[in-house]
Image (cartoon, rainbow, N blue to C red; front, side, top):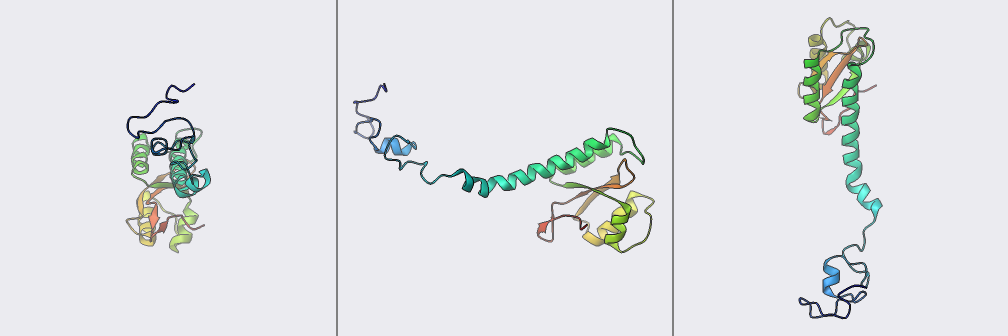
Length: 165
């Protein structure tokens, strides 16, 4: 049995029995009273719709970006593998909120309306910065399959940034 049954509560001067529905029970969200505590109106679906979807998307994009960096450290390499210092730089960009994308030379040529093979990451970055802006393209490096890893800002022209495919 509850030790306060039949006793008076010193703040409310009312009995604190279960089911009393007094002010003491309501202020702490008691579900034993009349059902009108702080928990009234709470549903898990409305809370998920409000905040959990946004934070889920943030976690998912960061996970995907870190996973791309992790993939560069494992397996065989066809092209130039990024150095550990470069991967650390990309990890710092992810910590600041950037997203990492895996792109090919063909995709860059398509987006930038060029027909060239980029000899360095700097020329590829210049071409992408010309298309999307310097504020969007944060860093670029080779990936182990011969393409590029590109760190981008999460927002471009007020919308979430995604490379067009």
